[in-house]
Length: 202
Image 1 (cartoon, rainbow, N blue to C red):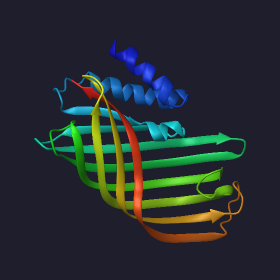
Image 2 (image 1 turned 135 degrees about the horizontal axis):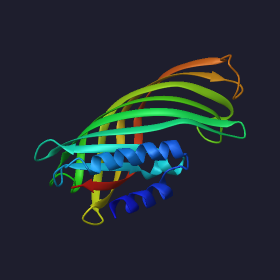
Image 3 (image 1 turned 180 degrees about the horizontal axis):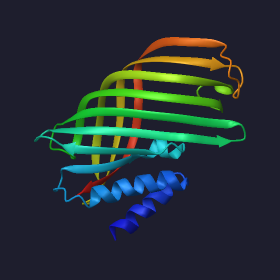
Image 4 (image 1 turned 60 degrees about the horizontal axis):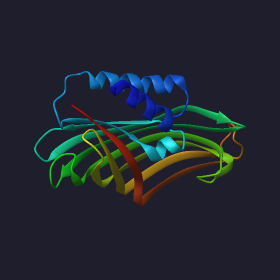
């Protein structure tokens, strides 16, 4: 029954690339059969990134009565359609302090973020007729709330506020290999947002 539920969620929320889907499915199955204890582990996927065809997978583990350790990963090795493409990889480790109890209600904690990206001819991020390639490094604070849907399932909207430094090259055409500009800049404000679909491992 567990495998059928997970497969159904993956078909809806995760892009159709069979290799990406297989990787996420294997991770879920391994974690689900690892003999973990109640309310100590959760596996999640960010519905916002999934909706724009960037697969995501998160793991969270309770380390004390009020604290959990969380790791978010997003990975799109290649998306290409009609001269548009997107490649990105993100790692975002966090620590969550729960004001009630782990996986219940509000939480707050420090966050780090590292991302590689290569975007071309997309209608967003100012790349409609160009390409941008670079990396981003950030640090901040993540706030969120865990809404319990059932004994196993939940939703977690989160937002991260903080500092981000990005270093990228810009190209005048999506397939050009000669950069026309190099941008190094910093930013303070929202650096990440998610709507996590949570599955509790017991």
